[in-house]
Amino acid sequence: MASSKDEPFLVVEDLKVHFPVTAGLLGRQVGSIKAVDGVSFALKRGETFSLVGESGCGKSTTALSVLRMNRPTAGRIIFDGTEISALEGAALRPFRRRIQMVYQDPFGSLNPRASVRDIIGEPLVVHGLASSRAAYEARIAELMGLVGLLPDMASRYPHEFSGGQRQRIGIARALALDPDLLILDEPVSALDVSIQAQVVNLLMDLQERLGLTYLFIAHDLSVVRHISDRIGVMYLGRIVEVADRDALFGDPRHPYTQALLAAVPTPDPEREAARPHTIIAGEVPSVRNPPPGCRFHPRCPNAFAPCRTDGPELRALEGSRLAACHLYDAAHTRPST
Image (cartoon, rainbow, N blue to C red; front, side, top):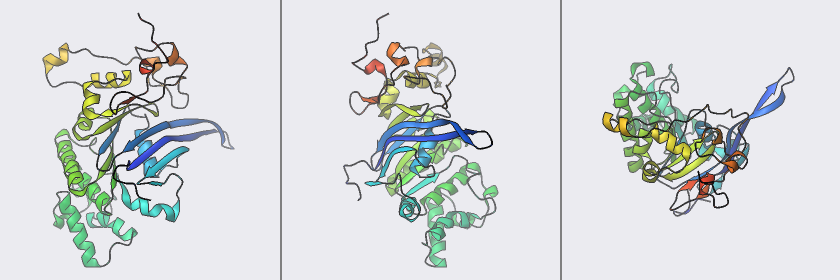
């Protein structure tokens, strides 16, 4: 049953993705890697929701689970009113058309032995949407024009294109099936800065023209600030803060979010020298053996007793802001210093 206009388009509830760790000749499980451990968020139709955080925090694993390239260990994924968490095979196929992905590496994600025509057209063939050769060629030309490529480039191969052009090919392939949701996994991180801006502007233009919804995965906060409507901050497999873009960048609440934003340099040398810098102490703990309580507490300058034993829930603050921090929990009062 499709969601109504006022309902969330994509809902992720308490998503967990744990990978077994085995040892010995018999492959006995001796532990698990908790790559995603209780992630919840929702997307509205037509918006861009970004997941940010350090490498290894579980952003891409979350995205692949939404795409159902990873099997969730627990939790629910509800897309346009239908739970797709446990769907398999033919039951999942219609949703494959509606959820597509643009990958980080614009070269590694393209078959070097296939022409651009075959790369972009493959989804049409797989899903039986190429009714005739003429319709096939017309659709490929349309898609190439949509992403700013000339149709006469269709006979070329990936190595004949620049990085930015290759990523445009990847975007055209993702759009071939007229999807509703695009998952963008670090789509500009492998590109030069000047090319990044072009691709981000293209994505924003396509969203407006085609009514797309984006789940955007990134670690570059300047890109996130430009493209996002709302942002979720992840740390060690969990979301620690969710807020509208301007609220998050203007007034971050979680200590980890504050440290992330403080690490972003400003282009003005005088302002950069004058502003305070928050340094996150220590190393990121292992996802195989995360610390008890709040997972950020070993590195948090504001940690107090409950942080070491009780894992904070993602709580509603003002507006649509959420934060998982005992500093905002009335049940725990931080002692004055």
